[in-house]
Length: 416
Image 1: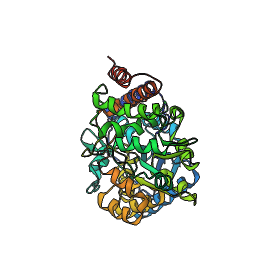
Image 2: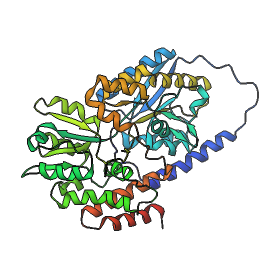
Image 3: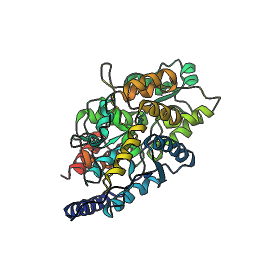
């Protein structure tokens, strides 16, 4: 997905997951008698996603239609709002009415796969070569690939070229350089840098590059490396280089601050590029986020959606859905999707060609090279930890010592 958004409660999701798993297990135990009827020819399949925006829905409908034509079927495309997708999927799984082709935000894949509602893609001989390791991991559950993302996204540093030039500031590559640059760029009515530190998964998403690149680990939040990362943010606020209003800012708010000249730099994603391009007076650039010190490897979180083939009673429909999924993840389609949505192709070779053709995306292509799935370490336990991290960020930016805020986050995440 373009950016994290509010989700149903973890308790509700856990309850629904258990119900789905029981329903699927019970259905799997039922036996039949007699010869199975010959399968009817499949002429259409269904697809479900959360692209409710009229433009995005139309764009994806076209891609699904084109790939359906390649597979010899009509694709009936339906979208539901993002907050409704997982509850809808779990209800459909429980009643065994899932669509033939299902899109999921990549952090949700493991939860849904754990219920038995999805089929592993090796069953359909889908080619997964050439995908970046982190991207393939995002669609994997217990060693099996259940979903593939045609394109992905992450966050990077977006900066105002004119402001940096006027202040004689180079694009920062380290945290020290970031703090120095942010201080020199700050003046009345303008902050040097803007981040989203609100009480949602967006703040966790924005913080992960600083945590991971410094050797921090979501399994062990109470480490010096994690505290160093959070202290960077608190120091930027204390110095006046970053607004305390970040506690309430979404990533859309960051864009508004940047476009209005109230922030010289921001942490944000490529989904902001279409709006940035519309402002002809705004000269901006993109660079990978700084690391604490030279020699460290930048590691960013992986955003984007995976397409899956749910379980159903028709192998023929599943096969057709898999053919459409393979088409969506083919080099030609993923390149077209990337250009259309300002995302990064998931196959490394295609991404390299894309960066040459669309220079404004090169910083994001570089940042995706070592990007990690948010569920890679914790699997289905990730949502609880994400909430604990965003809570720690809020606490630290309102005065608590970073190490203490993260100790509490660790206790919350592990239930100890």
